[in-house]
Length: 403
Image 1 (cartoon, rainbow, N blue to C red):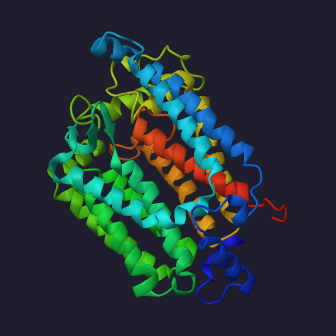
Image 2 (image 1 turned 60 degrees about the horizontal axis):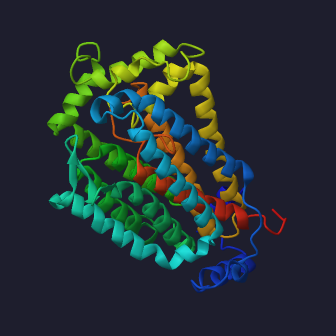
């Protein structure tokens, strides 16, 4: 398997023809046509269909979950629907454009993008961010609010793919293959925590260690990093008053159901009300009680209106999305594309898993959106760009029909 080969790369040199092909592909100029690198074939139709279906489903569920709040706050039940519809049209455009661009063109943009996103995150931390809900995670550009942390996830994946492919024969070393990746990711993680955005920090750490493992970094280094990261997370929770209170409320939800645990308590109630088949689209009652139901807790409304069957179908869609992403990774013509596709697939999977776990009160409350479904332009557009890159990798993986 491709992943197994990646895990052994530092001890067994890649075949000369593969190394030569990677060097030719990565050295291609940005203005080169895709055919100059590798003849592109058709994109993965299943992957494309899943992404488009999730975007469309998201528009429907945002309207169902937000109509009551939009009526009360803005006297317009279509307030959030209109915006999500516009975001979705833009996302489909981004998806189409990025899927047609050869992913190798991103290679030389890796560091400029990484630095730019780092600057945007720093701006949020130093007081230039728009504060909402006690966190400064947005930058206001006129009426538009941009959330840099969503860009950071894709930027870290792209940088790790670039760096790990470049250091293929030295990934097992500590000073070259492990420590630099941990330092750069650590800077972004600290910037997330300072906003504060603990959930995104955990996601970035998970993405880093996953790609290091797939690339063949020593398991001992990864385990050591995981232990240190876990210790840091415990300290960050225990010595932060609001995080610790949120943790206590999660452990004693019934006691805090009218205060700190109000949102997860109502979310669990929504899932329970849906039972097996759900109450029907637009008939959910928790839209009256669950705050911000159209954003981080939209899955609770899906559970109430479509029941266990609906949630099972949603989980199946995300599982298939991840599997098709891994398939593209295994078929990628080079290590760069392989790591890029695997990282993006992992990003979709872990964010969906964390969002659903929070909505079901399996984990304490964290501000993570449900990919392609939750309301929000930054998340939707970045995820669409990531899916487009994944489709671009799938177009070249097996375009010659040999894989």
